[in-house]
Length: 141
Image (cartoon, rainbow, N blue to C red; front, top):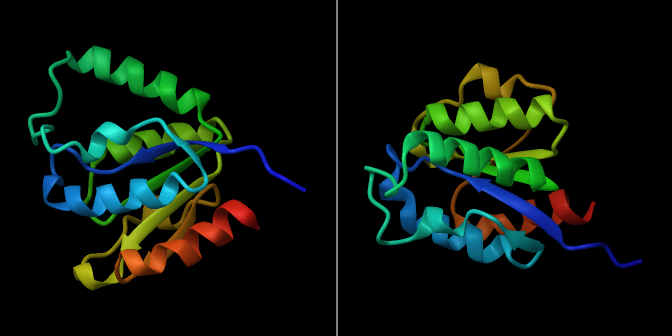
């Protein structure tokens, strides 16, 4: 049986996490095997920690429209982000399947509000080499 390609909302810290841009690029590249990624711009080299050249309201409305249209959400949650947490909360509210990725090598801990949510599937990983196994389990199981 073939599955429809997923419509994936990828979330990662922008204003606080540009140091993870190269990792976001790898994650997005890996996600494309499973469907269309709505938020590829998160890995754009031109995007700075100041964000985009849109108003905050325009970013909010656009991103929530994308999230509503997604069949699933994948969030890299190692770098804490109020925006990513907000998006996860909305996705839980709307019943969108959510995979959160957390790098164990970071020395950080995930917020209990994310790790303890029944609407979130948490997966720890060491580096991008671990992602295909995690994604196969999430998308193909």
